Structures are given as C-alpha cells and as structure tokens.
Amino acid sequence: MKKINTPLLAISMSIAAVLAAGCATQQSHSMHQTSPEMIQKAFAAMKRDFHARAIATMDRLDTDKVQDVCNATGDVPPEEMAAKLEAEQTATLKLPADGNYMGDWKAGEKIAQSGRGMTWRDKKMEPEKNGGNCYNCHQISPQEVSYGTIGPSLLGFGKIRGNTAETQKYAYSKIYNSKAFNACSTMPRFGHVGALNEKQIKDLVALLVDPASPVNK
Ligand code: HEC
Image 1 (cartoon, rainbow, N blue to C red):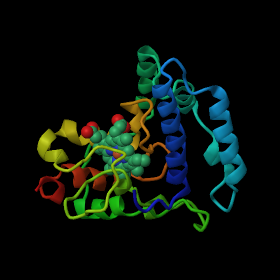
Image 2: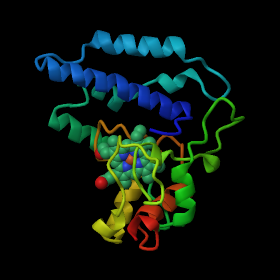
Image 3: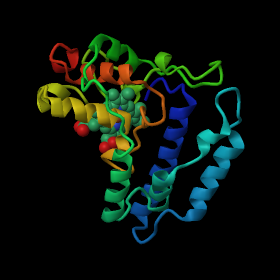
Image 4: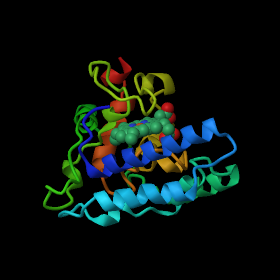
C-alpha cells in the first residue's frame, strides 16, 4: 500500500479492513456472519475517533443503502439483491455528453499517482485538483514499481480488452461508479461521490486503454 492521504480513501480502507476481518471470522467459523454488533462497534469507533474539520465533515461516515446491505451481508448479498443494487448504481452513471471517453494518458498517469484532495486542509472541494490514488490498489504503468494489490493489476488493460468503444465505456463507468458492476466493490466511486470530474475520468480511461499509454506497451 502507498500514499493513503485522503480521509475518504482512508475511511474506505478502514471499512475494508473491518470487513476483511469480518470475512476472516466468517471463514474460520463458516456458520457465522459478521454480527451486526461487530459492525456497530466498528462504526462507533470510527465515529468516536474521526473528528470533523473544515470540509472533512462527519457525514463522510454516513453509509448509503448499498453499503448498508454489503455490511449486513458480509459483502455477499443474495444474487438477486446484488443484481438489483447494481442496476440502481448503474442508473446513477453520468456518461460524457459528447460520447467521447478518451482523454490524455499523461494527465491520467498524474491523477493515478496523486492521492491529493478532500482533506481538512483544503479550503473547499476542488475535484479538478484531486488525485485518484489508483496506485494505492492497482498495478498500472510498468515504470511505477510501488503499487498496492487490493485491486487487480491493470497492466496491459487496453491491449487485453482491445481499444474499442465498449472497453472505453466500461473503464469510464467502472471508475465513475465501481458498484454498478460489483455491488460490494471496495473501489471508491470516484464520479458518483464527486471526487473526480469528467475530464479526469477521461484521462484515466486513456491511461488504461490508449495504445500509446505505457500500460499497453
Ligand atoms: C481502495 C482500493 C482501490 C482504489 C483506490 C482503486 N481501485 Fe480500482 N478496483 C479495486 C478493486 C478491489 C477492484 C476489483 C473488484 C471490483 O470492483 O470489481 C477494482 C477494479 C478496477 C477496474 C476493473 C478491472 C477489470 O478487470 O475489469 C478498473 C478499470 C479500475 N479498478 C480502475 C481504477 C482506477 C483508474 C482507479 C483510480 C482512479 C482505481 N481503480 C482506484 C480497488 C481500488
């Protein structure tokens, strides 16, 4: 792991850790789910220790319906429920009005590297200055040797899937709202929560899909 410096991601990581602990419990005692009491305790600890400062307000600890279901089901909701939640998340997708998904891969690399933004030091929310912290969880360009492994390697993403409109649209949508494809994904919903804007997501799509990007060399 590297460069965890936004509260948003730090919180999603600590929630992921709590849930991972829950999964471990589940595996060793396969008959038991993470108990609601455990989840309540985890949230109580976060509410106790996280203090509102400037733009980093307590509402960051609020969960929405899909997160509640994932917490209550140890991240494995019944199939039908998962499909329903994914359809609801898909309905939130705002795709680029110009129908173009590709930006500049060089700008995308900078965004993927950066963990800046949304901290209490920021005077206001400025998505255009935020990073995506992608290397925190993914291998991406081969030149970057420091990366996390919470998510799958994205090396060769465009080469493997092809530089098609469909691949571009998928990458854009996944970055915009990861839960549209996997209800209990631990990947932040960058577009959905307003952490990254349309231009930044297009730049990230180019990083992953553009044949000129080091990812596909
Ligand atoms: C906190 C960890 C985390 C961060 C940060 C993160 N991801 Fe992910 N990502 C995941 C995980 C876990 C998966 C696989 C599970 C899932 O969501 O389906 C994933 C899946 C993906 C996929 C789909 C891969 C496939 O083979 O279909 C893409 C594309 C992706 N991430 C891009 C990004 C980009 C770009 C960023 C930065 C803006 C990013 N991710 C940031 C955890 C993360």
